[in-house]
Image (tube, rainbow, N blue to C red; front, side, top):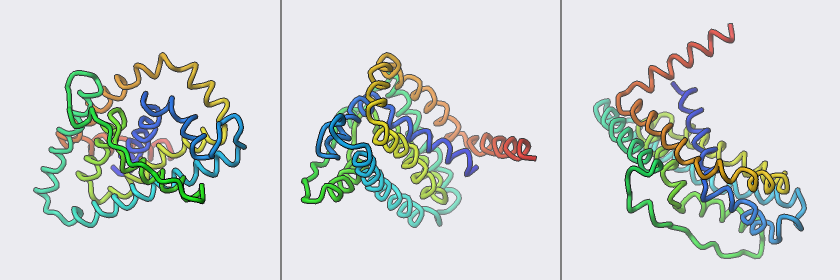
Length: 233
């Protein structure tokens, strides 16, 4: 089951990066981290600050994974069963929200932390990454909330799940920092697709929520593991 859920978490991180409220802002984001515009900053400067930014939010998610594992991993079977059902309901609600079929007021407002500019831009980039993980934006919050719910339902895998989510979110940031100019061009050409992105993610989250609620995610994951072993033999 671990393989399938890790893949789900990775693609959830990728979905967070591609969210309509994130990806158009990435060039300005990178320029802020590097202290100059994307056009003027050097490639390796952008990449270095992107790396520190990714390490910042990865540290927060990893710590949260350890916390969930420590608190919930020894819970009784009945408790974990109900955690799975509650997580499934939460993921379904978030899916309906992304499809525009449900209003969740607490998701409508943004919660951001202001980051003080330190003398060292490297420190600022790391702290900014940590603040990004703690902050909350409507279109990212639903996906992140779903992964947190899944991690709470599977505390034994929570650290790996949140690490995979960080990887899915972090790798595109690193590529954007390394290839900033082509990335800006890509974003400008894909605006029409990005407007419909939430619908695709919402449908996938509905499917995931139903699987988690019914406890059938383990069966799907088992089929995935069997197929993987079959292909490798």
